[in-house]
Length: 183
Ligand code: HEC
Image 1 (spheres, protein in one colour):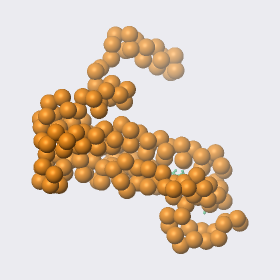
Image 2 (image 1 turned 180 degrees about the horizontal axis):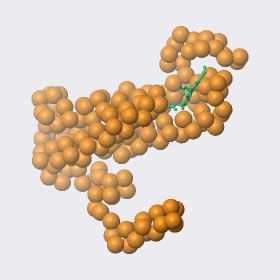
Image 3 (image 1 turned 60 degrees about the horizontal axis):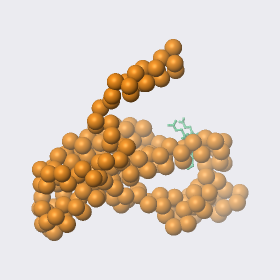
Image 4 (image 1 turned 90 degrees about the horizontal axis):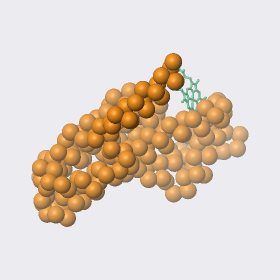
């Protein structure tokens, strides 16, 4: 909120924010590039530019990972369940509606805010860990119980391929990668 040599002070706490971390799927704010430049200008009063850019690289990577790997497929799974009429249109009268709500609103927001505020424990342990755990061990099995096969198209991406396990060749590749890297 502070002034810099080229910007006046502001009491609008959203004036320099590039993402919204509130909805199920995060989106950029309108005119976000300018807002981000204004924020980085503040950071640059104390930090070197590379430090600030590295912060944004990590923050963006976290939000995009959360969005693409978990939030978007979870939303699509819920939409498909409503379309298939295996859920009533009334919200919160079925257990999976609580699972989905907590996935984005509870641990999903906590992880995104953790990334924005540089809180590693909130990013990982209270964020991504719980998002992944509840996505794979609750939301997906609950959806499959309601309508077998309904999650399959939404888990076809490379992000979820790890569930298939590794082939003998892939295991060998990893062993070689780590041998080379750490002798
Ligand atoms: C008024 C000076 C000042 C401003 C403005 C400022 N910082 Fe900092 N920042 C610091 C200081 C001092 C520390 C070290 C604090 C400590 O180690 O206890 C720090 C620490 C950090 C860290 C390391 C955190 C960690 O856990 O190790 C990051 C990343 C960071 N700042 C990014 C930013 C970003 C991004 C902005 C702008 C949104 C910003 N800073 C604005 C002074 C500032």
